[in-house]
Image (cartoon, rainbow, N blue to C red; front, side):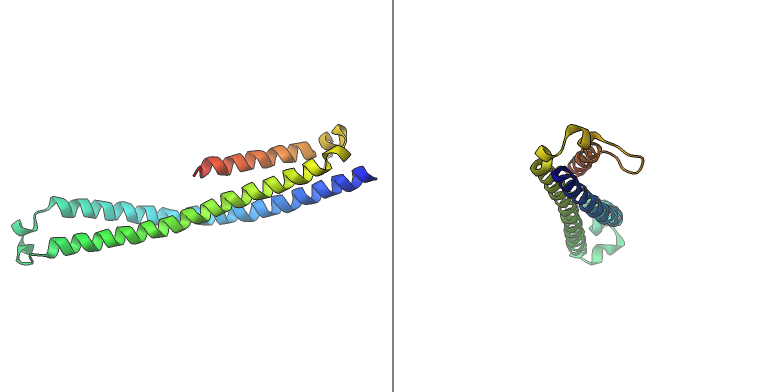
Length: 154
């Protein structure tokens, strides 16, 4: 009976972890999608800033506005800073997802370690037509954690 209770505890922990990872994956996808327009905007602003620095305004019809180039550069740099701030916020969300997944996987591994002595090797490796083995699921969790660590290494 203690083996059944240990197995149930590990399986419940695995279920909660997979549910949480599923939610975190949705957050990850939304955040990555939100980064696309910001990166595109940043690229456009950088191009505009480069163009602004290459042009000599005094040799154009805009030469009548002596501080126009400085004002335009200032506005473009402010827009770049704001976009970088928004991207940083998105990076923080990605880091939070990575850390959450890592924490969840660590929690499951802890539950497994606590119950490992009560579980036989056969029980940990047993698969059914409805359920993978505990060992398979633990391996999947470790692969998932590695994926997030590799996607956001900092």
